[in-house]
Amino acid sequence: MEWVFLVVAVGLAVLALEAWAQRRLLQTNPGVAAEGLPPVSILKPLRGTDSDLAANLESFFHLDYPRYEVLFGVAAEDDPALEVARQVAARHPEIRSAVVVDGRAVGYNPKVNNLANLERRAAFDVILISDSNVRVHPSFLAEMVAALERPGVGLVSSPVSAPAGSNLGARLEGLQLNTYVLGGVAAMHRLGGVCVMGKSMLMRRSTLSEIGGFAFLARFLAEDQVCGQEIARRGLSLALAPRPVVNVTGRVSVRQFLSRQLRWAKIRRHISPLGYCGEAVLNPIFLAAVAAAVVPSGGGLGLLLVTIVGKAAIDLASERALGVARSPLWYPFLSTAKDLLLGLAWFVPWFDASVVWRGNRLRIGRRTRLDLRPGPARREGGIPLPATETGFGTVHG
Image (cartoon, rainbow, N blue to C red; front, side):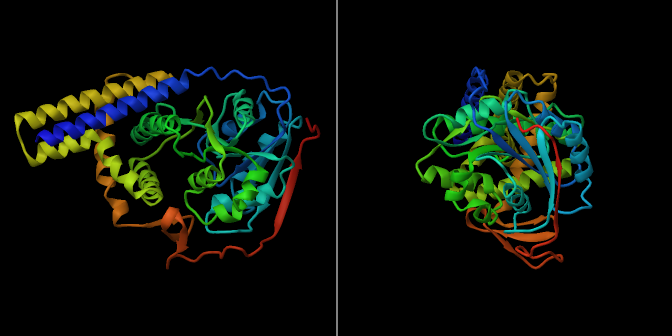
């Protein structure tokens, strides 16, 4: 039983250090001046209507930045996101923008296919990749580009936060993003590791071209992490923006939460099997619960209760640093429920290396390389489909 106490203590200590790294990141003064910074093409791949999609897209038309364009992309005319994007863009003729419908594919990753079609129409050398469910602060773009302008920087990514959530699944997802994910990203960057989240990534097109472009990245499920690894291999550094973007989740069922976490777990398992093994130590509640169930005793139950309280305190401190308003009474329940579910899910990627993604059943290989498996009917990658483009905006910055 002594080794369980040690492993649990190590896990709590590491999580506390990650929470400290997160707090230090959030205390960074992000204020920068946008004058003199280069123009930017913002690529927004869309599919379906995410929660508050119009408000998310609207936030990109209120950036304190002198010159940029916003390119929205969908793969098909019947995508409901198309009309939302057109309406938002039409309300802002002062910002150069376009809505692109293009179903051509360069690989099996549908998001990257969309990005490849948008990049063909981008006017500027600096490109920002931004997911549709992201909402940003007006100074967001200036902070990102200022980081890219530092000597030797090849890519800038943003940390991600989430609202408190309106139902159980959304609360679990928000807590995971605001603690384990954000703390881990902050700690990895402080240690000089490669940890990139594709919710918001900024780079130069010349850098993207050097690593093989979107045609190369479309081979992988974790295109963001692979992109960061390839850029780092070329001697360029990776920077982390000081201000998180907000991941707008809306209502999420517990099943959706688990499905998403399983996909991300499979990604981490194939990006770094050794690192994924170490994640088991970073779930001290699950370890303590298993120990208490296998060896029932007062000591085991006491360890579990102390671990729950300790983990809840770390999670509370992490979310308070973000300004997330959640009653302290929620944390023992939410932290325990989330970590027990994720503890069970941790085993799945060792036995299942497949995902079902937008009609295709895909097998994840090394570095999350995608290969087709027998499954539903699909449209083969690389077959050109009719493309149309609708432009908005009369002012070019």
